[in-house]
Image (cartoon, rainbow, N blue to C red; front, side, top):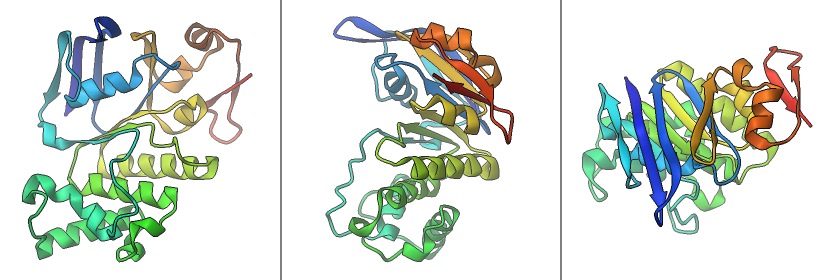
Length: 248
């Protein structure tokens, strides 16, 4: 299974923000799309999901359907002040099967609890979402995606509202889900060091154009990062795993 992007161009008010991008995202890998503000990262993700009108090109799902892709936008549309339990929020991932007002059967209840267990939130199933931390809430949103039985997870800046400890926690969790379940993950984040530590492939965008793609060791070089961000950076090896780390 894969997502194939061919000659994709997207414009806002006749101004191209994604230019003629060609890319293949394979399942079972964790990909990071990164680059400066305004590079077109979120727009590309929305176009892949079919939520953004395109000017040219196409997005093709190989050996899967749109329902096999779960999308987490930058801002959740869930009002955390409303009376809803962790279980009920996770169970919203069943909407493809039962609609928004259908009843959850015994087998589906088990699926929801298995998903909550995978994100270590099973003990919070009856807790109101208003009483969750940001990190806990993010984990339940991941459980909702797992309940959908998606093959690809598209995550648009899921670390934005989290402190550094919870950012690391979420990245480790997403990598574990990708490894354990064979999921493809495409994630937009700004922290290139977190991307290099946890992801298999990096996709660098600048001014809407695909600048370079490859493994962290190929992308995290002083030359490439200067081309992307127009600043000098020093690259060292992480003392534990040898992956590249960028320093000012």
